Image 1 (tube, protein in one colour):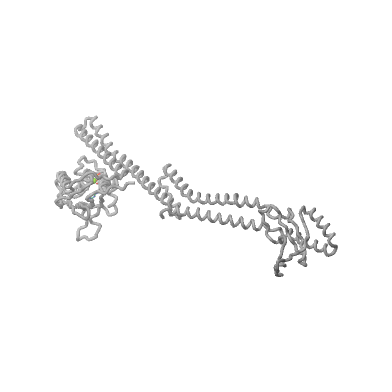
Image 2 (cartoon, rainbow, N blue to C red):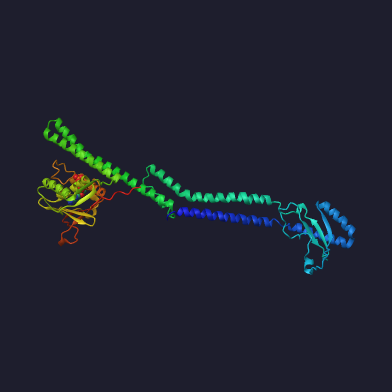
Length: 471
Ligand SMILES: Nc1ncnc2c1ncn2[C@@H]1O[C@H](COP(=O)(O)OP(=O)(O)OP(=O)(O)O)[C@@H](O)[C@H]1O
Ligand SMILES: [Mg+2]
């Protein structure tokens, strides 16, 4: 998969170029060779001249042949002659008959002509008795290779240009078609089509450009999720703000009409504080969602932190029993005491809130591997099995009716905005931990999920928060 495109381009260009050169050189040679032979009708014509010369010599004699030759030279604008073979070896040399038979003064009409020689070659047509030969310098009109120049221009310039253009076009298409898809997707995404993805359009590719498409899709997925979450958060926030705003309107009316003004002012203050908390919590959640930060500036003892939280909680819920099973100490480094404190406080308060009066909430901390496991178990109604992961979504409440409770006494009421666990989930993630919820069943119930004995929240925390990867 790595550098696939690079190797593909290398192979394509290198092989393509070698093949192109080979094909061009083969074509040039082939064309040149096929153009180097005298055309068959001209070969016939030359042979005919030879035959005519022989006939005239035999029938009419040398004088007639001389005037025929004269006429032929004028007609073909060339030189022609008839000669006798007279090879006379000397200095004791002998020539075998086979060499004498093959002895040639000029070129046979079937032979290849050298197109690069400017002078036309002399052609030889032996008489049937092989002692005389008709010789003629190839007439210009019969010279082959008339179109050699054009063929060369086509083969050496036009054809390579066309083939290289096709090669470049194929390469361009190979690289550009996914880039064009990416460009269209980016354009569509920037115009608000958040569900546009590129990878499904490139199923057959697994190279660098496919990786680029996957990175785009990953980015689009993340950004669209963020935008969706933000929209949802904003919609939920505006919805949640309506109730305190209505109450504020009512309280202002009461003050104006002087109906129980003291209680109305108290309500005003309370609703203002509620709204501030709601907005602050939402902004914190939006920040944690967007940035996915690593909060790792504090070193502290988790046991001390839990002691403080439990002490406050006991004070707030004196009618519930909050028991702890904690080790002597549990050091944590590179974490965030504030974020973790808020998250754990939320979990413990939830447990106390949903546990009936007089019942027990148990907080236990144990060491495991390179971190700690914190278990908060209550004796409340638990959460429907299908909603166990939903309770970590912002503004989610199992029983929305409870949230509509207009009571001023928030400690006595189980209502809330449904932000606590959403915040806790992201705060714990920001210090490198994880959280999950499960219903707790008593042993005798076994797996009978219809009657949970309470909710158990498990938090896994590392001793030291791992830092985020960087570029
Ligand atoms: N211990 C628990 N037992 C039963 N239900 C719980 C428990 N903890 C949370 N839940 C359910 O999960 C929902 C979300 O909890 P979360 O802490 O996010 O919100 P909240 O407590 O309703 O409001 P907030 O924490 O913003 O004041 C709650 O509304 C409740 O329905
Ligand atoms: Mg809560």
